[in-house]
Length: 84
Figure 1 (tube, rainbow, N blue to C red):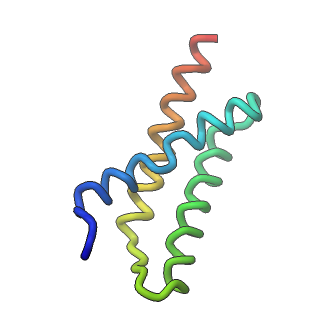
Figure 2 (tube, one colour; figure 1 turned 90 degrees about the horizontal axis):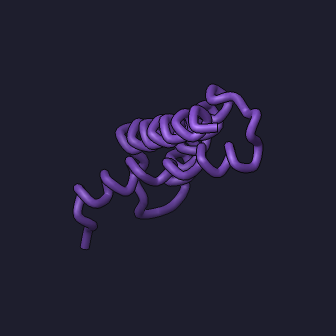
C-alpha cells in the first residue's frame, strides 16, 4: 500500500536538484541566495499543499530533504560557473 520509505527519501532529496541548474541557465546572473530561497519556498508550498489533499501527509523532514536537494543543485551551479 505504501511506497518504500528509502525510495521516497531519495526522491525528496533529489527532487529539486535540477531547479538551480535550470534557473541558472535561464537567468545566468541570478544570485545563489535567491535560488535557494525560491527552492525552499517551493518545497514549503509542496508540503503545505499536501495538508489540503486527503490521504497525503506533510512532513518537515521532506521539506528539509528538498531544501538539501536545492543546495546540491547550487553546488552544481557553482561548479558550472567556475568553469566559465
